[in-house]
Image (cartoon, rainbow, N blue to C red; front, side, top):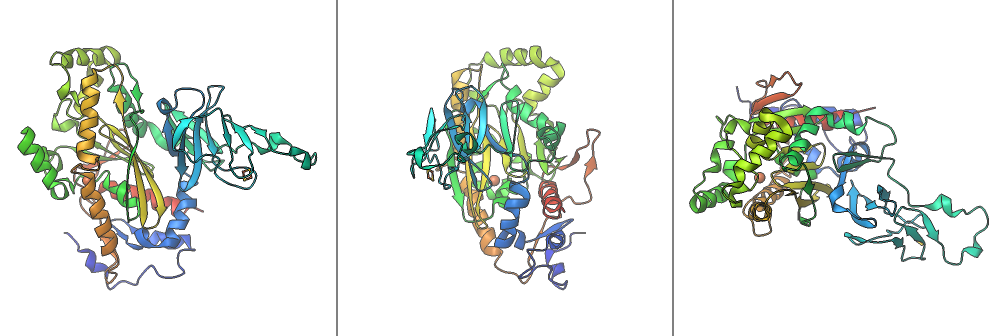
Amino acid sequence: MLRAAGSCTDEPRPWGPGRATNPSAYATLVQDDRVHSAVYTDPAIFADELSRIFETCWIFVGHDSEIPNPGDFRTRTIGRQPVLFVRGRDGAVRVLMNRCTHRGALVCVEERGAAARFTCPYHGWTYLNTGELIGVPYAERYDDSMAKEDFGLRPAPRVADYRGFTFASLAAHGPSLDEFLGPLAKAEIDIAIDVSPVGRIGVAAGVHKYGYNGNWKLQSENSVDAYHLNALHQSFLDIVRDQMGVDGRAMGTGTSPAVIRSLGNGHVAWDTAPLGMELQFIGSDAAPADWREAYKQQLVERHGPEHARYLWARSAPQVLIFPNLVLISSQIRMIRPIAVDRTEVHLMPVLLEGVPEELNQQRLRGHEAFYGPSGGGATDDMEIFERQTEGFRATVDPWVYLGRGFGRETGRPDGSTAGQMTDELGSRAFLAQWKKMMTAA
Ligand code: FES
Ligand SMILES: [Fe+2]
């Protein structure tokens, strides 16, 4: 039976001033089928998240196709910590803290570019793109205890790559990236790459950004919430139906055969293959008519007939990699926590190598239509995140109810847990990992 979230109003409040320093209190905030809204609004919890989650987890930093040549760089963040994602003159990809080892200023404020060296504007210390300190103005006033070799840009403690996706961890110890992703999340990343007939993708089409006045987790959870599609995005779906004759509602109904899966470690994916929508998300409508069969044949040759059929049935991943990376349709999405009530989202369209140019153009236009500044979809989501944040101010009943499909999940032989597409399994799995990390010793 559906229990209203209001049924909790008589219970003692598990949250209040001064509780944030006690990690065990977090256990009461995330329950099996509900979460306390303080998790989205309390600045002390946000501060704890930065250290317990963003400075502990593997965080996606960039894709190697963004920095193909020596000197290419992007400035990125791990939580709120600034880093340089850079290919050094030796060809190696590094993640370096974007902090001058003299007195701490950013050494680079450009979002992207190519540089042989980075010169800090404050006193002029200069670093190679490998991080090595090579220039200190008027060095004669330092004594011998100041050795330049000791003052290179500090590398992130751990950096690892999965098929061109670079992740970094600010924790020197912990599970490897391989363990953290696990085979199921890696299989979702594989889809993003393997739908290219040559097995390569390019993330060089640029970045577009949006921001909202709300907590970062609202976007993480929303990315794998299918329950909202037909309600919140109704106007977009109406336009698609009227202009293209395609009814997109089937995926997000309570009887949809599509599936949501918890992959472990807080990672969550949709499996839309049961919808039977061949090549739906790949952008192939714009490709020449005879291309589809040739493409399918290429996939069969690379992956065998069974997996090729799965790839063109999926045609794109839709996966949340805990805590803030999403691969969805033709984009990589990085969710950046700015403040407890401020979030930036960076979206990078993914282009496929080995396909007709028209197809990649179609991917970009489709991306813009839903996610772009004048698009019809992402704007709905941002609006609702801000309405949630306003709504959370009402604390007579502070609970957020996530009980849809609770207790009806099924285990799968691969170790995942699956529910019907519109189940709130995604939020429950994401928040279970949040609780695990926030309460860890
Ligand atoms: S802070 Fe960078 S040179 Fe002084
Ligand atoms: Fe949405």
